[in-house]
Length: 377
Ligand code: 5GP
Ligand code: MN
Image (cartoon, rainbow, N blue to C red; front, side, top):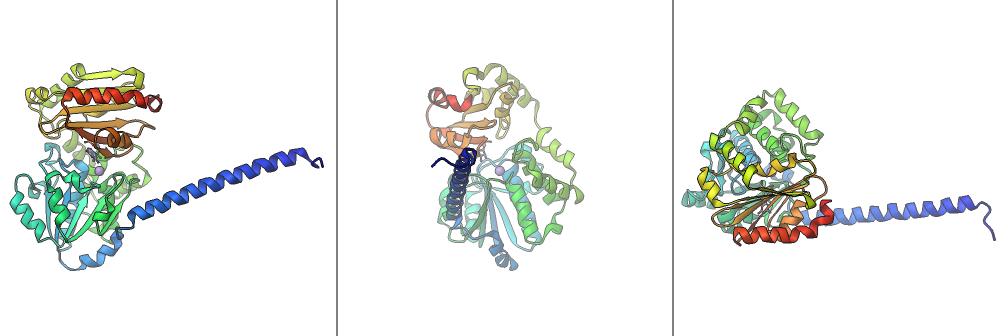
């Protein structure tokens, strides 16, 4: 029998298709959220840690090797807060750190594990609680990895990187939607009902990490909540200009000369792939007397060139060739670093390494780049 109204029948079919699509999207979201929740099943929420902090504890705070502004800022901010709460707090960095974080209040008290291994091991062995900040897996702490794995005390993770090793922590939060671990420390203080304990030192450390990890508020991770956080810190007396100066106007002449040299002689633009590659041999680091942290931010420079969507920087370090990757838009640096260079990080910013020579690792990069062609155009 012919339909009474053919138009109605066609629109009915469209409706069914739309409903099926909505149903499929809903199921996919449910499955994703189930997997997400399963991944976090191992860690109890931070709120359950608050009762444990009602008594004075021996606390160690640690972070990833070569701590940047977010790693150091979050560690110091949490350290200042817990000390004010009456806990005995030590901050241990797995390695040395860049001079540009040295202005942060409290850095003089941070132990460098590589320098003070015996003392740090003693402190770690007697800790009640260890906070692990701004990294997703113990191997990011280099030579501290084994000792952190072996300790039986309460381990807490606060981090915003992908694929956390949740099973290694009793309490914690891993949230990739957060701009920075510093933002998460701010959330922690607020959730604990202690926002009024945020003093100038804590505010400075938190702000430094947020600025560092959001590229001074330009990345998508600088969501509305980040700006509300900054407004709150400002109301509490934060001098934001001083922190930008501390982070960005605090280098020696050699670093600027080095950047000029690198951009002129060490940067290759691979227009076919909308990619820039910077390769820094060890001799450059020696010639310009480049120290820890003085190469930070270099990988961002090529993004000021029209059309560049992916920037890769490799530095010939003693023990390894260290990669930094940065992308704009829909190119997944985390997957790229994980797949080809034993690394990881975030969607638009990641890092990795290679044990091969500089020439071989550069050749490996150029060999896999054509596989990314469709993603880079
Ligand atoms: P950067 O290039 O500044 O060293 O690192 C960019 C981002 O990638 C940071 O969030 C950093 O924590 C992460 N990252 C850098 N290197 C590695 C690595 O070797 N492994 C992992 N999992 N993440 C890394
Ligand atoms: Mn961070």
